[in-house]
Length: 231
Image 1 (cartoon, rainbow, N blue to C red):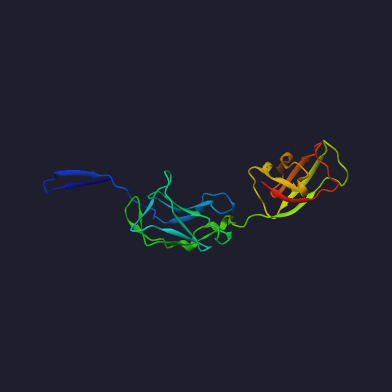
Image 2 (image 1 turned 180 degrees about the vertical axis):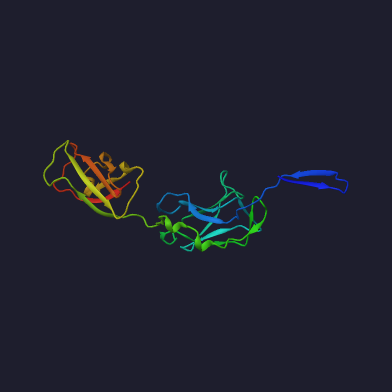
């Protein structure tokens, strides 16, 4: 509070007080962060990017966007928890099929808007963009290329097998995969010799599946040949 006392020539005094707030720290852009975990993201997935300010900030007379290093844009995105006027302002980038692949970063803040300190209503400019931490410290990767099978082998030793025996197949992809329902992946055989619904497939590594097939009494073949994969 500020207290002021006034006196006249007769030594009569009058005192008044007023509560004020003194802003010591100047508002500015502190960093650019991402809500997503490090990893690869593909078509249709959203990447949420934040402008983190030192204090509450707002924009007016236009809407900002973030230009990304792949030529795409993250657009302003308001949620119940993150709104215009807070110290964090959020943007959303949704990956499309023709987007350039690679590690993601923000190269500039676009949009003809005015930035304002929420507490003081004073306008400010973002002039430290090149000096703040950005997404280059993270590993957020755009990857629109579907993984391919690099190797498919039967790892059961060559030989003759009867009913009840297990044949095990190893499927290796050319990159890391995260398959929600690996057991839906089935192998197809020449002439549909085996019952594909009997396969049990599990993911055992970042890019590897094992598929096991129990031989039944209806299976009869002298030479097994894999002709495809279904799901």
